[in-house]
Structure formats: C-alpha cells, structure tokens
Length: 216
Image 1: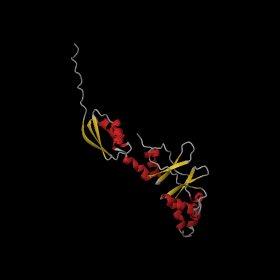
Image 2: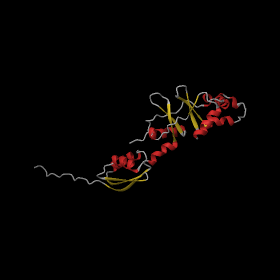
Image 3: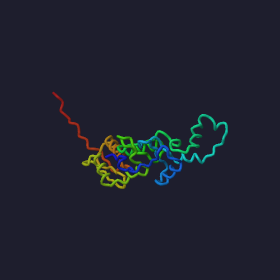
Image 4: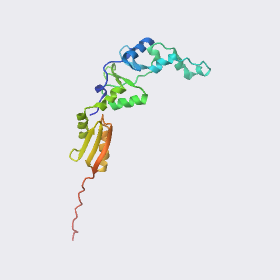
C-alpha cells in the first residue's frame, strides 16, 4: 500500500498573507521553526513562497557597478528593496495534495530544492497543511507487521520467503531469474523499504519434455 501525504503531513497551514510585512514573515518562521512560509491570497490559496534566502537578500549590499544595473539584475534589486510578502515571494508556489504519494512529494522537493511543501485541498485549492522533509522520512518507521504484509503480497509465499529486518528485505527461495528481477523491483517500490538483499536462490525445477515414439 502506497503511503500518501495525508498520512504524514502536519495539519497546521504555515502561511502568511500577501500584505504581511518583513517582521511578520520572520516571526512566522521563528514560531514554526521553518525556513520558508507559503503566501496565500484572500481565499487562502497559495500564490507563492517566501524563503530565508529571499529575506537574506535584504542583508546584501550590492556593488553598484554598471553590470549591476543590467536587465538581469532588476528583479534581484526589487527583491532587495522589498518589504511585503507579495514583493518577496517566489511564484508560483510548488504544492501537493493529501492524496499525493510520499514518493512523488519527495521527488518534488528534490527537483525544486525545497524542504517543505504546502498541502492544498483538492476541491477548494486552499492550504490545509504542510509537509516537511522529516515528515516524509516517517515512512521508514512503519510497523514491521505492515511492511511484511506489503512484501508478502508482492511475493509467492509458497515458494519465496521474504524476511524483513529494520527495513531491509532479504529474498530467498525457488524463483526464476526474470521473476526475481520483477519481484526485487516491486519490493524496492514499497514505502518503508530501505534495501533489498538476495539470499539463497534456487531455480524452479523444469519439467522434462515428453518424448514420443516415432510414428510408423
């Protein structure tokens, strides 16, 4: 069974409004001990994100050379002077829904180099929670019985044994090479599996071809 964001997310929507000022944003980050906050509109829908990096631009004193006034630096200079969330934020916001798989959420975080994502209601589009990197890691703390049940469901228990020890699955038994590869792929996709090892494997017994006497 695939673990979804709803199973690990926090139910508190860590967000500020568009007109939130610099101090309010910093206060929200300190209160929730996070490195970014979602920016929401009047309908509580996320329109962007303000991160610590965005705020730290205020501490940078750029060298006013001719190069610094080029077109590519205008947006950066605007953000340096910004004081409200709507001016500081990076848009659009990268979001997930409660039904998003933990694996998909992890891929989004890795792709966009973020440590948390706003969770939105699939019907209203409003923020209903937040999921952090450490929330996603909770899949590796799944009860052993649940993990064993998922592993067993992927295998043929009559011919294969799958031992689970602290997230490491060891496969052994009677199985063909192609079937073993398929099984290993399926087990690696199970949420909570840290690694897969191969124990003693024997090839299934082959049925000898029937030999018929020549026709006279």
